Every structure is written in structure tokens, then in C-alpha cells.
Figure 1 (tube, rainbow, N blue to C red):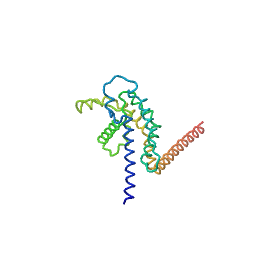
Figure 2: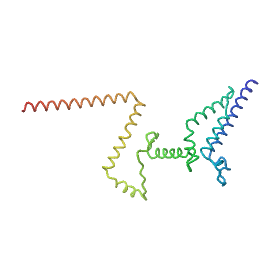
Figure 3: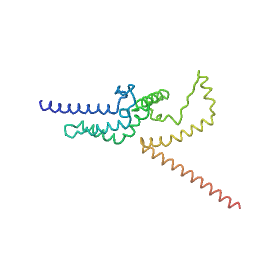
Figure 4: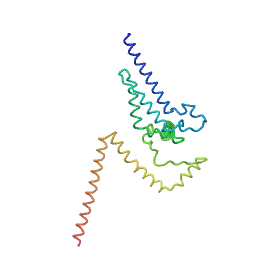
Length: 224
């Protein structure tokens, strides 16, 4: 019992230390926004204290140099350090733009929430259980402003039928490669059999066309 308690105590201490470092990382990145109210209060401009990508990069570099877990019991801290070093090396430049461009958010949570609402809306109006086919939402969106269903119908009827068919065909052609790869992924055997059947039918059509052409040429020779 003492051995188990001692082992769990060391694990808890490791997790607590890792959480402490994680809080320091979040504070260095000022995440979530306005996590340091003193920096958002009105104060004279000072290049040394003004929040910028250069300042955040310097603070993060200093934090990484201080954070050096090496011993075996510090597994949680080691994993956090390795993940931080890898991601900071790969994505630091992309993350730092938000400190120099006003209005650029630090995350894409609001965008993901918007896409979630759009997917739910598409599922509701289409009646489909899955929205994978509707992920791209086509090449364009059309917004109609109408006061009644009759007014909406009148606006839709203003689109020429030939133009609608033309752009509908373009949309089908643009979606064809994605749909083919989806069928190939979910049913490779059936997709291969369909391709073979299409190839066989095309060969038969070409053979019949060639036979008719040869027969026509033969008849022309006899006539002459």
C-alpha cells in the first residue's frame, strides 16, 4: 500500500508540474485572449512592453530554455516538452501572425462553430443523415430575399433553364472525381467491376462502329 501511494504521489506531482508549465505556456501566448488585463489597459506606447510577435517569440524561447525535464518520473512533463518543441518549431510563424494583425483571432473555434451550424442546416434542409457529400456546399451560394413563396418562385424562374442545366452539368463534372474516389475507397471491387463493364461496352461500341464503316466502304467499292 505504501509503495502504491508513493508511486501515485510521484505521478500526481508530475502531472501538477506539467499543468503548471502548461499554464505558463498559455500565459506566454496570452491565451485565451485578454488573459492579462494589464496589457489591455490604456497606457503610453512603449516598444519594450508592447505586445508583438517578436516579444511573444522571445518569451516562448526563454520558456522553452527553462523547461528541461529529463528524469524518468517526469513522463508527463517530457511529453509536454517534446510536443511544445515540435509544434513550436513547425507552426511558430503561423501562430505569431495574430499578434501583429489586428482582429486576427488566435484560434479557429468561431470558424469551426460556423461550419458546424452550416452542416446542421444542410442536414436539416436536405434530409440526409451525413453531411460528407455537402461539405463543399458546391462552387457558389445563392441568397434570395423574398417576402413570400410566390416572390421566391418568381425570382427562381428568372434563371433560364438552359443556363441552369449548363451550370448543373459543370457542378456534376466537378464532383465526379471526388465521388469516384469515394466509391473506390468504400467499394473497390464493385468500382473495378463497373470500370471493366464500361470498358467492355465502349469496346463493343467501337467495334460496331468500325464494322459499319468497313461495310460502308466495301459497298462503296462495289458500287464504283
